[in-house]
Length: 299
Image: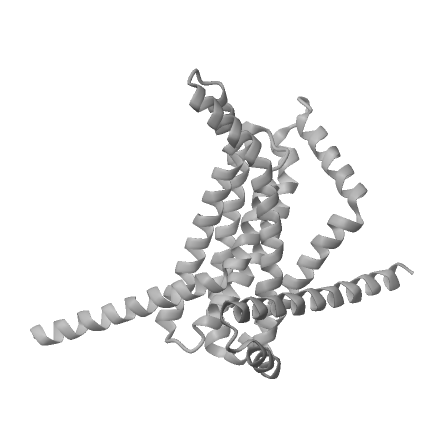
């Protein structure tokens, strides 16, 4: 009986070790989406009154948990009954990431005036004391939750691709673990980021010269941090999306791996650059097709 118990404990330890390893691997593969998710959600509270920032983050976090409560069972059903659909779903998700990245760049550089005007209108509305803050935030929260659904779907599908060949229990544990880790991690960091300026302001008013210097440094760095997150998130979309697309076409993946083989860190950098180029080109193609279709409909 003691031997049976030891065997059972060994099996449990093996399963937990597999879950831990696969969760770590899935977290690495979804890091790009996580970067974009973090940057995007941090931007969602831009212009919100200071006392409403955390309630907005909490509302979106609740919506994100609900999204993942829908997506995890759906992913398990696909992985169990339609395993052949995992790769096409990954490819579609990669294409969408690349499209979203190109669309963001196009909006940033080709529609500067419209973007600036929209931001100014929003900030003016949120600064109006007569505006019901909760009502004004409702649409923002709904939009953020819709965007989170797409990014959460990417995270879950990428994770599903990582554990596609694993037993059902391992799939369930890894998918659930990634869903919770990503939600807590993203929205915990978002809450910290949006309160950086408050922390900096508080420190800048202290009597201590060191505290004031630190507070002023935080106030100066906060806007640059937001910009850096946005840039890193966009770059990660091309790297992750392009990498998914490259690996979904074995001939292309083998060609690129052969081209960069033996190059050390330069080879790794070259492979990542190739993934990004593939992502940018495909994203531009998808954007062109969608824009052309919309123009045809309007015409």
